[in-house]
Image (tube, rainbow, N blue to C red; front, side, top):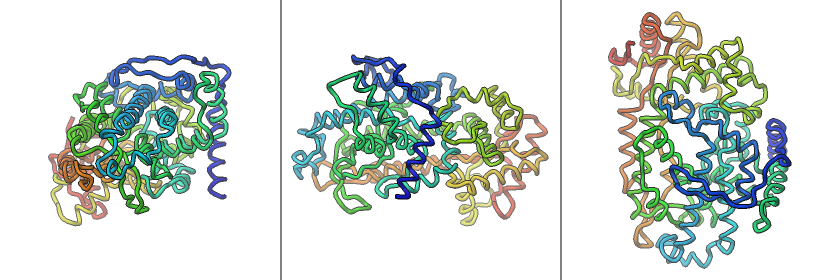
Length: 526
């Protein structure tokens, strides 16, 4: 009961923040629309989907950049969450249709065929599930705020998200992210369901809008959750190891940025299948979305594509300098003023767009000055860059301390985040600079933890393998960590300041608390 009240309070606060849906002023589509996409080609969208896209919550996605501040370094990478959303709808639809069309062939794994799974397959209502899958893909990114994942790292630490994560977790799925929880709260709200029903019924009489129970299921799918073990593979299509989101962003982010990342989309979609597997948690049979060993080449390309994007795009030092500056600006503002971009309510962040940064930058606070610097691309410069292999005092103790430092890449609480800010400000003081002028960047580990959930079926029903047994992706990740995962120190421009930050960073990191002796070769003089 307490959990239900808490969720309802959060729903009311969200709906109050984003305002009324104003359905009466929207155009209602009564015919399907054909859109050409650079990744998926010709895509067809149903009239009810097009009507929903007219809602302000969807149109806001046009002004949220998919890859944050990457456009500072890759000028063409200005694609939006809206474009990505349309692509994910098409990807999810292709996966679902591929499985249904191949049920008599290889849409089921050999183990599924042997178990005569088709007789018990929940596709008497295949058309209905197809509609729901597309709707889930359509709403999956509505929980993002300005500059996408960059702001999520901050608002995800602000109450009540810490409590909501505990209330919405499912032991059979990964912990829900803040953006995913936002989608769940939105689509399970009464206001949303009433608005969608009105639009939907104006668009078509042939397909009914999702019911309250179906919206609950859609919200859970976005978080990768599904209570019915027969339908877990549907949740996997929306949020799982081989979900439609990955199929779209890996190709789209590389294509738009001009980075030659590609994989065989058609092959992957044509070989993906449903396999009955034993749940690690419940020990019961659950149907999962997976790929057979014969499709391993397509999976290998997808894994390698993500690694390439991490190296060239997401972890590029200029992209990291911009994203760190924005993230620290939000974090320091919240810790000092209990506001984010001047907004006292965290829920208001879901009614803003990237352009709101320009209005905030007109203020007179330190945080507004940081926003102005960001807008003008006056980024801090890389002063030091090092990996564990570069340290001059390698040992078990040093390795443990370096791992602790890497752990700050994904702070789970404000206490963790304060440790990172204290380290930065200690270096700044030692260099004779003001607090906030130095940033220590620890990029997130590309760990591919989701791949560990996969079981790859073989040619015979009894054959199955973990991905690491047939793909040496663990070696790729280990090599990436050794050669490409850098801890970086950013500071202000100017020869004197840079030299001061360099010496201060070496001194602070060498202290017993951190115990890391940075070599002279780690310095980047400008």
